[in-house]
Image: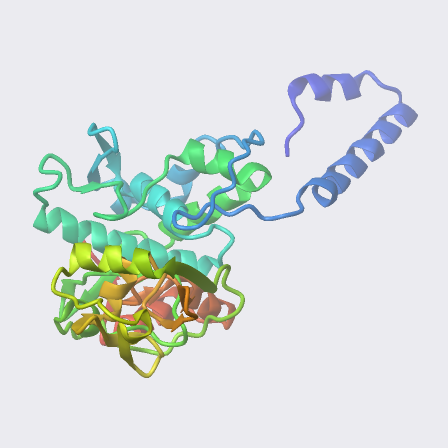
Length: 353
């Protein structure tokens, strides 16, 4: 923290003892302020509840990102379609800052944030190369159901409040220290999918989408009870289950006792549902998750005579990199390269351009 010229001039006209007393008071204030105000750790996270109080967090120092980020990301443009349909051109560095801030809690370990930056960069480059009919004038959009979430820096810093400068600079470093790096399989950028948390193992892509992808295979993931809302529950009446099911799968037979509607669930090694029968129709765990708005396909379902209760563990589709798993690995001392090559089997981390 630098004193302004006005303050320097003020100290200059004080006597010796007054200078010493004023200086000691200023030092005490600077040391005590962080202790009294920097408690708590608000997190900006796209999928979870967002702190909404604007506590006056401002922008980081002008030029912070430029000083930190090396030239590869600054030299590549990204055309981003906003939610209002307008298209904004950003540098890759500025775009990735907004993605990391929106997709991963900034309180996470820096190596996890770096892994997220690399995954987001790789995903973006792949989108630039393939294009999309959903946003033909842009490389990518800020709708997380289509592409990746994105948040403006001012909005993210306002939500972070007193942690704005610290968190903003952490993400600056995560982007800068992975400048231009991405995840490659056999020399080509991968579909760098990621999600929030899993109940011990990620899911093989073939279980979710029916297509095998060599680098998206099931691996152990070390997160657990430290994850917010790691365990969740959805309760639905028989009428609600029937209505939702028949709207999507009209051939399902949901006559008779509701307790017989669900058949035995088949699970993978990690406990995620691979398939189960519902009214005689075979569904994947992912289809059931979507149908009943569950946080993941790692669930059990019980009937108590009135309602169906879905007990769920984890959050997301389960394929690729687990964000909370990445943070747990970073806490164990693993680097972002270790994290990425663990979750994306057989890949390397290299320059994308």
